[in-house]
Length: 162
Image (cartoon, rainbow, N blue to C red; front, side, top):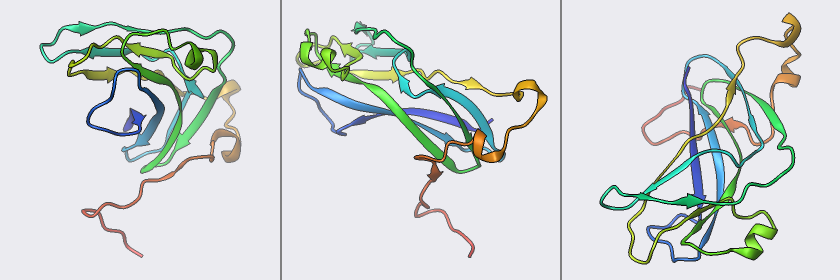
């Protein structure tokens, strides 16, 4: 249906020091030709992370699970639009990360060792909306979260007609 998702880690760098905690957000982009409606958590804690070293061996990814209810949000993205929600922080290297855990800033710990070249992949959980509740379509403003949703900026290879 054209819906794409990616975890974005910040700050962006070629290498990270052991003990670094990266901020994360999850970006959704509608690359299709029709609007897409989906639900997702406003703070992604349960998405899966897989880490592998340069030889393809699995690196353990652990982390805390925070209690409470994570709110869900419904997004309606027109073709070319994108939106983002927060993701939990990702820590590099085994450790306790007590302060980061106490403030909810870390949700995954990649137990890499000094010198490891890590390939990291993620899954993203959404619920695709195929039918409106009670057979009624809500008003356009009720089904669309406008905050942080906007068209992607044009690239050097794209053109737009005025």
